[in-house]
Image 1 (tube, one colour):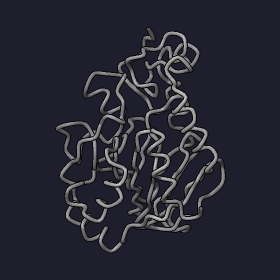
Image 2 (cartoon, rainbow, N blue to C red):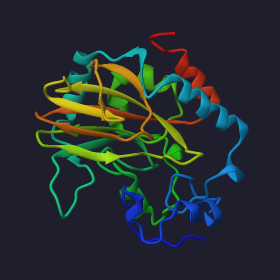
Image 3 (tube, rainbow, N blue to C red):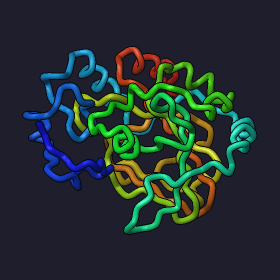
Length: 257
């Protein structure tokens, strides 16, 4: 089995002993493939999952869907929680003006807990956690009525949360869940100050054209990075369990067939 530190960094190459070749050869089949200790490769990949990945590849890197969220309703319902934002993945060695709240996560968690996989892994003392199984709604989800139609369409969901970037907030270039298989694919919507002058998202080194309130499929396995010039750029991050059924359900919502 792979040995790893008790920390799970977003940049997994910083883990002691982390190695993709070793994950393939010696990874733990009981751990999530996206986790630092999980097994990857054809031994645990079904033809259905491979086909689902091929279908997602055929769609593109950033794909607008027909589903939208009313921004006025969103801002009104979220205003109840204006003072509840907590730091998202804070670092000791550098500052970053970004916050978050949890909508759907591990059982018993509140909206101010479990914002990141490293935090959950440390809290549960388990590096092999699977975010597709974190499907318990928080009170924040229950109060965000404007999201229910979309979130319930893909239910049950994995870890789903808000990230808010304020002035100077950023995410460095990185990839999410690049191995096969992965547990989830991501849908994202943008609110608040997320226009082109306030907020910039790059995927594959190209800037996204964002329509606020619209849901997008974003292939976050590709290199992506963000930075924000103003306060209050809010992003809804939805982890949809990777099944062929969910891929086809999402395709039924393509804005452009």
